[in-house]
Image 1 (cartoon, rainbow, N blue to C red):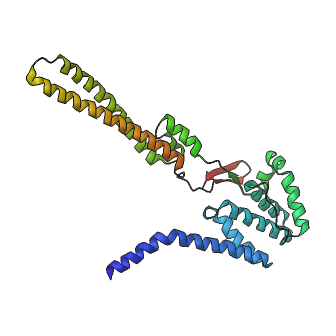
Image 2 (image 1 turned 90 degrees about the vertical axis):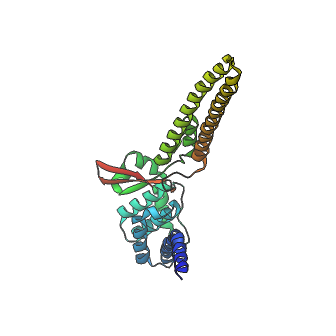
Image 3 (image 1 turned 135 degrees about the vertical axis):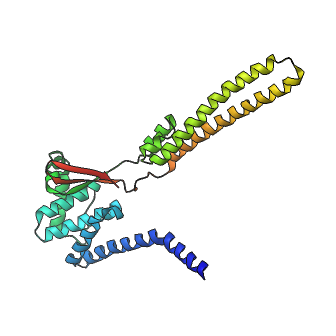
Amino acid sequence: MIKKICLIVILVIINLPSLFSQIQQSLYQQMIQAFRQLNYETAKQIGKQISADFESYTPIELLETHKILGVIAYQDGNMMEANAQFDQALSIDRTTQLDSVYVSPKIIQYFNELKLDYASRRKSREIDQSIHYQYILQPDPRPAATLRSMILPGWGQFYKNDKRKGYAIITSTAMATLSTVIFHFLQKKAHDEYLQETNPASIEKKYDTYNLFYKLRNNTALVAGGIWLYAFFDALITEPKQKQLKVSVIIHKYPYISAQFSF
């Protein structure tokens, strides 16, 4: 009985991430459904929950959320809020469109006008003064991390913010490389002593010593090479330590104070 309970607990823990994801996805779908049914108040409340918990959602979900909030704000006559929501959507995808099935042509025209001069307004910082935060798409760090790990094993892991693995790789590489160098000089010295030995009783012993250091040098060199390959492919394949939404947020609390972070 105890084993069955433990098994159930383990299965629940393992499936918690997927269950949480389903709940979040359900909340997003509720907002979409409420908006399409013209239940704007419900869609607005859910949209605010989603935007407040943006770390749990994908860029596409955030994009649609801000578009819906922008449409609702326009319908309510709150143009400043509408501009803020539309600009946040455009900061994720400047080519996005509003759905003509659920959005009036007047709002679509207004949104398209905002989209046309988005770049110039952002450059002049008009957007920064009108919204609380904006999204900035970040490039995948793996190509740059791979190049760094090719030069120095562990450097790429640091670049991807996986410092624990970076320290482990750098330390292991240093130890393997240092051991290879030490065993190289020891085997070279042992080899010279073996060649110079004239006593038949000691020749075999000298050879065994030389052979031991020779094998140790080769093995530690192989280990160093293996670590280098691991660091290279780990930087190339493994997902970055940070969440892979590739979206960061700049929060402007005051005109001259801002904070930036990634997720």
